[in-house]
Length: 237
Image 1 (cartoon, rainbow, N blue to C red):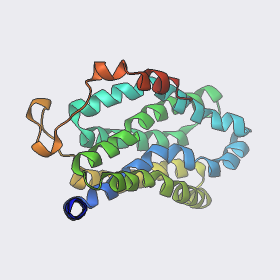
Image 2 (cartoon, rainbow, N blue to C red):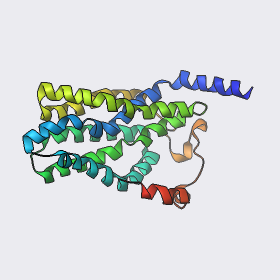
Image 3 (cartoon, rainbow, N blue to C red):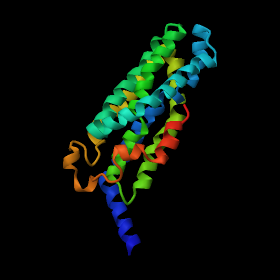
Image 4 (cartoon, rainbow, N blue to C red):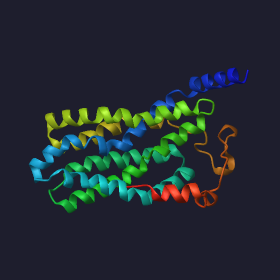
Protein backbone atom coordinates (compact mmCIF):
# COMPACT_ATOMS: atom_id res chain seq x y z
CA UNK A 1 0.00 0.00 0.00
CA UNK A 2 2.84 2.34 0.86
CA UNK A 3 4.45 1.66 -2.51
CA UNK A 4 1.20 2.52 -4.30
CA UNK A 5 0.91 5.79 -2.40
CA UNK A 6 4.53 6.62 -3.24
CA UNK A 7 3.90 5.81 -6.89
CA UNK A 8 0.81 7.99 -7.03
CA UNK A 9 2.65 10.84 -5.35
CA UNK A 10 5.48 10.55 -7.87
CA UNK A 11 3.05 10.62 -10.79
CA UNK A 12 1.35 13.68 -9.37
CA UNK A 13 4.68 15.48 -9.00
CA UNK A 14 5.57 14.82 -12.63
CA UNK A 15 2.08 15.83 -13.76
CA UNK A 16 2.40 19.21 -12.05
CA UNK A 17 6.08 20.01 -12.42
CA UNK A 18 7.44 17.96 -15.34
CA UNK A 19 8.81 21.00 -17.14
CA UNK A 20 10.91 22.14 -14.16
CA UNK A 21 13.56 19.36 -14.42
CA UNK A 22 13.68 19.81 -18.19
CA UNK A 23 14.42 23.54 -17.87
CA UNK A 24 16.80 22.84 -14.99
CA UNK A 25 18.70 20.35 -17.20
CA UNK A 26 19.06 23.02 -19.86
CA UNK A 27 20.23 25.49 -17.23
CA UNK A 28 22.76 22.98 -15.96
CA UNK A 29 24.21 22.70 -19.46
CA UNK A 30 25.44 26.29 -19.03
CA UNK A 31 27.73 25.13 -16.20
CA UNK A 32 29.88 23.23 -18.74
CA UNK A 33 29.56 25.68 -21.61
CA UNK A 34 33.22 26.67 -21.30
CA UNK A 35 34.56 23.11 -20.98
CA UNK A 36 32.98 21.06 -23.73
CA UNK A 37 33.02 23.81 -26.33
CA UNK A 38 36.74 24.58 -26.02
CA UNK A 39 38.14 21.59 -27.96
CA UNK A 40 37.18 22.83 -31.43
CA UNK A 41 38.86 26.18 -30.67
CA UNK A 42 42.30 24.62 -30.07
CA UNK A 43 43.45 24.68 -33.70
CA UNK A 44 42.08 28.14 -34.59
CA UNK A 45 43.73 29.65 -31.51
CA UNK A 46 46.97 27.87 -32.35
CA UNK A 47 46.86 29.28 -35.86
CA UNK A 48 45.97 32.78 -34.66
CA UNK A 49 48.36 33.11 -31.69
CA UNK A 50 50.72 30.14 -31.82
CA UNK A 51 49.32 28.74 -28.56
CA UNK A 52 49.53 25.07 -27.74
CA UNK A 53 46.97 23.04 -25.82
CA UNK A 54 48.57 23.99 -22.51
CA UNK A 55 48.09 27.71 -23.06
CA UNK A 56 44.53 27.35 -24.31
CA UNK A 57 43.53 24.95 -21.54
CA UNK A 58 45.09 27.12 -18.83
CA UNK A 59 41.86 29.10 -18.85
CA UNK A 60 39.87 26.11 -17.63
CA UNK A 61 42.30 25.69 -14.73
CA UNK A 62 41.81 29.32 -13.76
CA UNK A 63 38.02 29.00 -13.97
CA UNK A 64 37.75 25.75 -12.01
CA UNK A 65 40.31 26.43 -9.28
CA UNK A 66 39.32 30.04 -8.74
CA UNK A 67 35.65 29.08 -8.44
CA UNK A 68 36.26 27.03 -5.29
CA UNK A 69 36.44 30.16 -3.15
CA UNK A 70 33.14 31.50 -4.50
CA UNK A 71 30.81 28.49 -4.28
CA UNK A 72 29.80 29.20 -0.67
CA UNK A 73 28.96 32.82 -1.53
CA UNK A 74 26.64 31.77 -4.33
CA UNK A 75 25.06 29.20 -2.01
CA UNK A 76 24.21 32.00 0.41
CA UNK A 77 22.73 34.02 -2.45
CA UNK A 78 20.56 31.05 -3.43
CA UNK A 79 19.20 30.91 0.13
CA UNK A 80 18.56 34.65 0.12
CA UNK A 81 17.24 35.27 -3.40
CA UNK A 82 16.10 31.84 -4.56
CA UNK A 83 17.39 29.68 -7.45
CA UNK A 84 15.40 31.48 -10.14
CA UNK A 85 16.90 34.92 -9.62
CA UNK A 86 20.42 33.57 -9.15
CA UNK A 87 20.02 31.35 -12.22
CA UNK A 88 18.87 34.25 -14.40
CA UNK A 89 21.77 36.46 -13.35
CA UNK A 90 24.16 33.53 -13.67
CA UNK A 91 23.14 32.70 -17.23
CA UNK A 92 23.62 36.33 -18.26
CA UNK A 93 27.11 36.37 -16.70
CA UNK A 94 28.13 32.99 -18.10
CA UNK A 95 26.95 33.53 -21.65
CA UNK A 96 28.48 37.01 -21.72
CA UNK A 97 31.77 35.63 -20.39
CA UNK A 98 31.93 32.98 -23.12
CA UNK A 99 31.13 35.59 -25.75
CA UNK A 100 33.96 37.79 -24.42
CA UNK A 101 36.49 35.04 -25.15
CA UNK A 102 36.13 36.06 -28.78
CA UNK A 103 37.90 39.32 -27.94
CA UNK A 104 41.20 37.59 -27.06
CA UNK A 105 44.18 39.70 -28.18
CA UNK A 106 46.92 37.07 -28.26
CA UNK A 107 48.33 38.06 -24.89
CA UNK A 108 48.30 35.16 -22.46
CA UNK A 109 47.58 37.59 -19.62
CA UNK A 110 44.54 38.87 -21.50
CA UNK A 111 43.37 35.29 -22.16
CA UNK A 112 43.60 34.32 -18.49
CA UNK A 113 41.91 37.57 -17.44
CA UNK A 114 38.97 36.71 -19.69
CA UNK A 115 38.76 33.34 -17.97
CA UNK A 116 38.46 35.04 -14.60
CA UNK A 117 35.15 36.37 -15.89
CA UNK A 118 34.27 32.84 -17.00
CA UNK A 119 35.09 31.70 -13.47
CA UNK A 120 32.46 34.06 -12.05
CA UNK A 121 29.98 32.79 -14.60
CA UNK A 122 30.77 29.16 -13.79
CA UNK A 123 29.99 29.66 -10.12
CA UNK A 124 26.83 31.57 -10.99
CA UNK A 125 25.35 28.61 -12.90
CA UNK A 126 26.59 25.82 -10.63
CA UNK A 127 24.45 22.64 -10.47
CA UNK A 128 23.14 23.39 -6.96
CA UNK A 129 21.07 26.23 -8.42
CA UNK A 130 19.19 23.89 -10.72
CA UNK A 131 18.95 20.88 -8.40
CA UNK A 132 17.86 23.09 -5.50
CA UNK A 133 14.70 24.25 -7.24
CA UNK A 134 13.92 20.72 -8.46
CA UNK A 135 14.41 19.18 -5.02
CA UNK A 136 11.99 21.70 -3.54
CA UNK A 137 9.20 20.53 -5.87
CA UNK A 138 9.88 16.80 -5.96
CA UNK A 139 9.79 14.47 -2.99
CA UNK A 140 8.50 11.02 -3.99
CA UNK A 141 10.38 11.17 -7.30
CA UNK A 142 13.23 13.45 -6.26
CA UNK A 143 16.02 11.08 -7.32
CA UNK A 144 14.77 10.80 -10.89
CA UNK A 145 14.08 14.53 -11.16
CA UNK A 146 17.55 15.46 -9.91
CA UNK A 147 19.12 12.86 -12.22
CA UNK A 148 17.35 14.41 -15.20
CA UNK A 149 18.61 17.83 -14.13
CA UNK A 150 22.21 16.66 -13.90
CA UNK A 151 21.92 14.90 -17.26
CA UNK A 152 21.88 18.33 -18.88
CA UNK A 153 25.66 18.60 -18.57
CA UNK A 154 26.08 15.16 -20.14
CA UNK A 155 23.90 16.09 -23.10
CA UNK A 156 25.88 19.31 -23.47
CA UNK A 157 29.13 17.32 -23.74
CA UNK A 158 27.79 15.87 -26.99
CA UNK A 159 26.05 18.94 -28.37
CA UNK A 160 28.53 21.73 -27.59
CA UNK A 161 31.46 20.46 -29.71
CA UNK A 162 29.12 20.06 -32.68
CA UNK A 163 27.71 23.57 -32.34
CA UNK A 164 31.15 25.10 -31.78
CA UNK A 165 32.64 23.28 -34.79
CA UNK A 166 29.82 24.46 -37.05
CA UNK A 167 30.09 28.06 -35.86
CA UNK A 168 33.86 28.10 -36.36
CA UNK A 169 33.56 26.64 -39.83
CA UNK A 170 30.90 29.14 -40.89
CA UNK A 171 31.96 32.34 -39.13
CA UNK A 172 35.44 31.96 -37.65
CA UNK A 173 36.49 31.42 -34.04
CA UNK A 174 35.83 34.94 -32.76
CA UNK A 175 32.22 34.99 -33.90
CA UNK A 176 31.87 31.38 -32.75
CA UNK A 177 32.54 32.35 -29.13
CA UNK A 178 29.96 35.11 -29.41
CA UNK A 179 27.54 32.77 -31.13
CA UNK A 180 27.75 30.19 -28.36
CA UNK A 181 26.96 32.81 -25.75
CA UNK A 182 24.08 34.25 -27.74
CA UNK A 183 22.54 30.86 -28.56
CA UNK A 184 22.58 29.69 -24.95
CA UNK A 185 21.24 33.02 -23.69
CA UNK A 186 18.35 32.97 -26.17
CA UNK A 187 17.61 29.35 -25.32
CA UNK A 188 17.76 29.61 -21.54
CA UNK A 189 16.61 33.03 -20.41
CA UNK A 190 12.97 32.84 -21.62
CA UNK A 191 12.56 29.29 -20.27
CA UNK A 192 13.97 30.21 -16.87
CA UNK A 193 11.77 33.29 -16.68
CA UNK A 194 8.64 31.31 -17.52
CA UNK A 195 9.11 27.88 -16.00
CA UNK A 196 11.97 27.76 -13.50
CA UNK A 197 10.62 28.39 -10.02
CA UNK A 198 11.28 26.56 -6.76
CA UNK A 199 8.64 25.91 -4.11
CA UNK A 200 9.83 28.79 -1.93
CA UNK A 201 10.52 31.25 -4.73
CA UNK A 202 9.46 34.71 -3.74
CA UNK A 203 9.01 33.88 -0.05
CA UNK A 204 11.21 34.77 2.88
CA UNK A 205 12.70 32.16 5.25
CA UNK A 206 10.02 33.14 7.78
CA UNK A 207 7.22 32.52 5.30
CA UNK A 208 7.98 29.17 3.66
CA UNK A 209 5.28 27.20 1.93
CA UNK A 210 4.27 23.98 3.73
CA UNK A 211 5.56 21.81 0.88
CA UNK A 212 8.91 23.59 0.85
CA UNK A 213 9.92 23.65 4.51
CA UNK A 214 13.65 23.45 4.96
CA UNK A 215 14.88 20.91 7.48
CA UNK A 216 18.25 19.72 8.68
CA UNK A 217 21.31 21.61 9.88
CA UNK A 218 21.90 25.31 10.07
CA UNK A 219 24.81 26.79 8.11
CA UNK A 220 27.06 26.95 11.15
CA UNK A 221 26.17 23.42 12.22
CA UNK A 222 26.89 22.17 8.73
CA UNK A 223 30.37 23.67 8.39
CA UNK A 224 31.41 22.01 11.65
CA UNK A 225 30.46 18.54 10.41
CA UNK A 226 33.40 16.21 9.52
CA UNK A 227 31.72 15.34 6.20
CA UNK A 228 32.02 18.99 5.17
CA UNK A 229 35.43 19.82 6.61
CA UNK A 230 37.15 16.65 5.42
CA UNK A 231 35.68 16.45 1.91
CA UNK A 232 34.36 19.76 0.64
CA UNK A 233 37.42 21.84 1.47
CA UNK A 234 39.72 19.22 -0.05
CA UNK A 235 37.94 19.07 -3.41
CA UNK A 236 40.49 19.15 -6.24
CA UNK A 237 40.60 21.98 -8.75
